[in-house]
Amino acid sequence: MQLFVVFEHASGYGLFSVREFEEVGAFLPQVEEAVTQAAKFQQVVKLVGYRAFTSAAQALENINAVSEGLLTEELKAFLETNLPKKKSKVQLGVCDSKLGAAINEALGVGVTHVGVVPEIIRGIRTHLSHFVKGLSLASMKQTELGLGHSYSRGKVKFNINRADNMIIQSISLIDQLDKDINTFAMRIKEWYSYHFPELAKVVTDNYQYSKCAHFIKDRKTLSEESLPKLEEITMDSAMAQAILDAARMSMGMDISTIDLMNIERFAKRVSSLSEYRKQLAQYLKKKMDFVAPNLAVLIGEVVGARLISHAGSLTNLAKYPASTVQILGAEKALFRAIKTRTNTPKYGLIYHSTFIGRADLANKGRISRYLANKCSMASRIDCFSESLSSVFGEHLREQVEERLAFYETGGVPRKNAEVMKAALEEHNAKMEEKKTKKRKLDELINGGEEMTEVPKKKKKKKVAAEIAATAVAETEVNEETTQNQEGSVKKKKQQLHQVLDSENLNGEKMVAAEVVAESPKKKKKKKKQQEQEGNALEVINGGVGEVIAPEEIPKIKKKKKHAESAIQEEINPETEVVVSKKKKKKQSLEGI
Image (cartoon, rainbow, N blue to C red; front, side, top):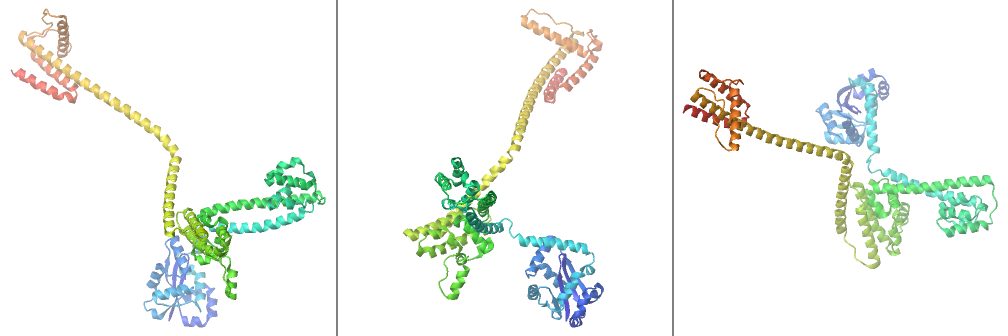
C-alpha cells in the first residue's frame, strides 16, 4: 500500500508520496534522524503536486476550513487530480483527524494521522523550500506571518461593531471598585474616628464621608465660615449644621499633623475612586445603549451587563433558552438542589431587577420566568438585528408591566403578536426618520458648496439673458438694415431706369429736372430725387460729373450692370429673392 501525505501551508496545498512505506514504518528512529538532513529526507519523500493559493483571502478561507475540519472545494479537486485512481491501494496521511474523516467521507480514501505521518509532516514543513521551486525561506516566512495575522484578527474580532468585551470588562471593574471603595471607606472611618468619631454617625454615605474628612482635617478649625462648603459637599444644610455642632462637642482625641496629612491623602484617593466609579457607570450606560439597547431598556444597564458578562458574550446570551437565562448566576444553588433533591432556584441575576422586587412573594417565580422570556427575546434582537433601536425593549417592558398588573388586579394584557407588530411599525418609522435626518445633515454639510455654486448659476443666467437680449437687438438691427437696403435698392433701380429713359430720348445725360409749380412738400421730394439721381450718375460714371455723348451709352450700360452686381453683393441673403424679382421685371421692361 502506497502512502501519500497532504500538507497545508500558508502558500498552498502540497501532496507528497513516501517511498518504502513498510520499511520506514519499521524504523521510526531512522526517520526522525533523516528529518534533520534535507538530502536524506528527499530520498524518502517525493513531491507529487503543489497547488498555490491565488490570494490572501483564499488562503484565509481554506485555513479556516482546515482548522475546523472541513474539506474545501480546492482541496477536494487537488486530491482528486493528484491521487491515483485506484483508491483501495492508497493511504493518505493528514495532520488532523477531523479533516481526515471529511476526506474519507468525500473521496473514500483510507486516512491515517498516527505512526510515521507526524514525523514526515514535520520534515516537509522543515524542508518545503527544497521541494517547491521558487519558494524561498523569506517568502515562506512572509506568507506565514501575513496569514497568521489575518487568522488571529478573524478569531479575535468576531464582530467589531458589537464590542461586548468592553461591557464585560466595565461591569467587572465596577463590581471590583464597589468592593474596594467599601473596604477603603471602612478603613478611613476607623482611622479618622480616633479624631472625630461623631462624623460617621452624621454622614453615612462613603463618598460624602471621604470628602468631609478631606475638607475638615482638624475638627477644631471648623467654624461658621465652613458651613457653605459643608453644605456643598453634603447637599443638606441641616447635615452641615449637625457636623459643625458635633465638631464642637466631640470626644475624639487630638491627632498629629503628619497623621492628618496621611488621612487627607487617603481620603482624597477614596473620593477620586468614587468619582471614577461614577464615570465608569456612565461609560457602561453608553456602551449598553450602543450594543444592547433593548436589553438595557428592559432590565437595566447593570443587570443586562451582568447577564452578558456571565454568559461570556452577547451571542452566547442570545443562544441561551429562557429557562437558562432565568437561573443564570444561580448555578451552585441549582446543582445543590439537584443533588439534594430539593426545590430548584426561581431566579439568578435577574433577581436584581425592579420587576421581581415589586411582585408579591407568591408571584416572584412567575414574573421571573416571564421576565427571562422577554430578556431572551431582547438579547436576540440586539445580537442579530442590523438596525438597532430601543423600540422593542420599550414594548417588552410594557408587556412585563401589564403582566404585573394582571397578577395584582386581573387586567387582561395584550397579546404578544399585537405588541410585536406595533413595535415593528414604530421601529420602521424610526429608521426612516433617522435616514431623513442623515440626508438633511448631509445637505447641510454640503450646503456651503451649494451656496457658492448658486451665485455662479445666477451669474450664468444673467449673462445668458444679456446674450439673448443682444441677439434680439442684433436681429432687429439686421431686419432694419435689410429693409433699408431693400429701400435703397428700389431707389437706385428707379434712378437707373430714369437715366436710361432720358438717355434714349435725348441722347444726353439729364443734369437737372423740370421745375413745375407744385406744393413745398413735392418740391422737397423732387430735390431729393434729383440729388439721388446725381449720385447714381456719379456711381455709373465712376464719380465724374461730365455730360456723356450718345456714342458712350453702351459703355454706360456695361457700367450699369457692374453697379447692379455690386449692389446685389451688398444685399443680405434674405433680400436676394426681392432683388431677383425686380431683375425679372426690369428685363421684361427692357424687352418691351
